[in-house]
Amino acid sequence: MRIGVIGAGGVGGAFGAALAKGGADVTFVARGAHLAAMRANGLRVTGPRGDIHLNPVQATDDPASIGVVDVVLFCVKLWDVESAGATIKPLIGPQTAVIPLQNGIDAADRLTPILGKDAVMGGVAQISATIDGPGVIRQTGTFMKLVFGELDERSSQRGEAFLTACQAAGFDAENTTGIKAALWSKFILLATNAAVVATTRLPFGKLRDDPEIFSLFESGVAEVAAVGRASGVTLAPSLEAGLLQATKNFPPEMMPSMAVDLLRGNRLELPWLAGKVVALGRELGVPTPTMSVLNAVLKPYANGAPA
Image: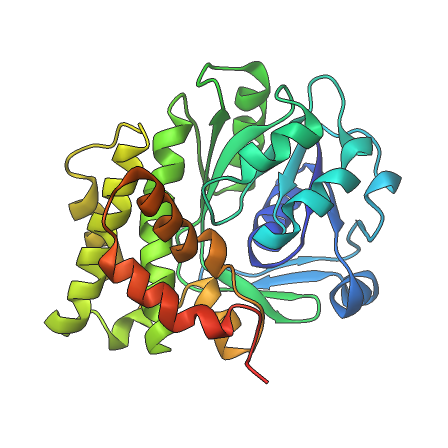
């Protein structure tokens, strides 16, 4: 199976490396020092699941040089969805599956006008990983799962074929006929957790044992879930409790990628996470007081460290 990984950061680097080790023909699209290091020394993924070192590694800064692939793992930051989407058209054949793995809720909707509705699937990445240095990905914790499915929520041969590749790669995977609920489940968890952790600038282990602080997680999850249900997505009544339990079980040193970006002075995905919750809540008439405050507190840092 030929796979193009667009964006070789924590998500794309970790999953792409595992797929390559499992036998898939994987080419990474990267840039700058990260690309230079990958070309010189390969791609290294470190963490408690065990280390992977791909050397040599197929990597380029020109998507058009790859040719048509079976699957595109689309792993760029949320602000790059449209611009990066336009560059990957040469990778798309009649059966190609483009699986966006962004943190927000609308990447597939934004890609569809660019690539066509037949190309785009829905996808959810469950992993904590970040670039530790050029050519090196560091994973926190052992959980690693991809959930993907057709946007019309029908089964497909290409979904089953990619599931087989994921199984050979050794991480958990699910080809679902309920991708909309899966997307919202992650969005509820991540939008809340990214906002709380980034605001406090502390990992989960420093936050969740304090009842007053944990109430921020509880109210945030409740607000985002209410927005999801108001938008027409069917979510299980027990979902919120399960997501909060997951937060309690995360590795104590773990921080969502938006919090890592904040500490590094980088641009934040805030407008597509907490900001998106607030905007949808306003549109649908759903109150989001906790998420509104967290969004406002983080807004001065949305474009990087204030000058």
